Length: 324
Image (cartoon, rainbow, N blue to C red; front, side):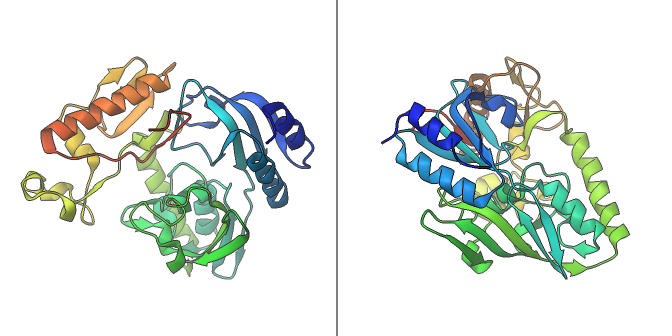
């Protein structure tokens, strides 16, 4: 197996691949937190990406593929290995079908479809992150998810580039087959839309962005909601009985409800804060660290478990931490 130095040299020979050593991952995460990666490489070219992936696999280093970095908590020590990113971001339409590269911003896709009079993604307006990440985690809001529109996903399964239709993606609430096969790499998604009035769609999207920006300003160093909402039907009867019907949406109970009951609002650990107005929003107020962020998340989970017996599940993923 190749050493780090040999791997870096091999990656540097691949066309259309940008490679660097010791790149601070705080540059690529919305929390603006994270130490350096031993090797960081990105490309918008599928063939170059696959060549880089092959080199990484032949090395003695760990490797992970990174998306937009919106939902990542990267260790203060960084990542001992290779970070690969696919950054192609083109979006095109053919009739009522739209194809978007995985590296395109979800908001760009929402804007593109709304402006083109294509209905179906406007309720996803303002959700940070890339199209690939949105498909991976089945992103959604206001009772709708991207899975409703996905027709085909093109991806690499470790052996070949292939496609899955909607059923094959096995979408569930904030879940997909890609999330259960983390070594698979999404390259693009084709979505089936419907014709509608562009002005109406753009207004709907703009109104949602306005509301979302009041809670999650684009300048805020955060990942949006930290914890997944819970399904009312899966709660223990005594816990469900404590949930006011007014907070239930589409059969889901906001994690923020339980967090608020245990005094989460306004808590802080160093420069990491829980918003005073939203119990499921944690942000980096300046020079926050991953250690402080993880500590605060642990405290919130502990409080909810002690009060309700619930295990809150993070929407974020952890990078560079010891395997347990």
